[in-house]
Length: 263
View 1 (cartoon, rainbow, N blue to C red):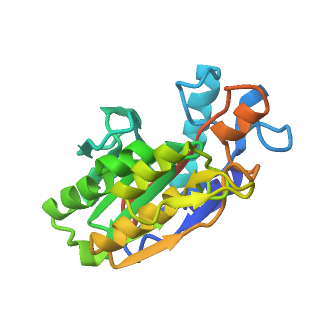
View 2 (view 1 turned 60 degrees about the vertical axis):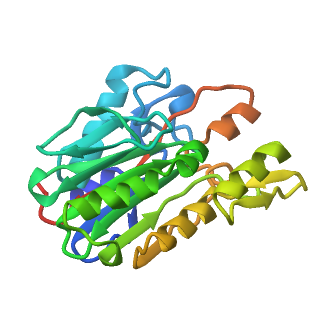
């Protein structure tokens, strides 16, 4: 996002239109070790303070990300709901419990969403006057976090038909195994999410549900960075860690900011 500084933290570009800049991080480029380390045993860019990693390491990782983004980054305490909070000033701290953040360009802050299998969604209008970051897990998808986010952006003057959305890496429909009853329940609420694992059991395709909801909400442009967090070791994955016998893993992030929000 910010030239030379970005080289220390690998960032995967996210298409959020001409007026904003978006990116997704990986496990690489940080200082965390152990279960929170990088895919090749090097320092990991774990950005979650709540997953058992050393706090100083996480804060150092967040500082590296801010340097790469070129702006302070606002975080949220994600709770798998549909609450949306507005960031109104430059921030490098948590905004509180919610599952989406929105900001006008004047806030001069990047917005972050952390995941380790859930779907990170970044949004911006064409002018970059309003941006948003949403955390969409199974519960948030059903509870309408995307609809709440798009409505909040519309309230700030960003019409849905002028929005660009980037759907980031998440666990895919071939890997997200769930009980059959749960698959049917979610599919009834969010059509298009029913799936089958590569080994033939019931599953959910959350990213497909996200894309369907965004299109149904009138979002004009939806781009997807197609990578499965469970299959692709560049990313943290709670499910992959569980299969390896540990619940400990980090969080990577999606970050969006207006083009003019640099320091």
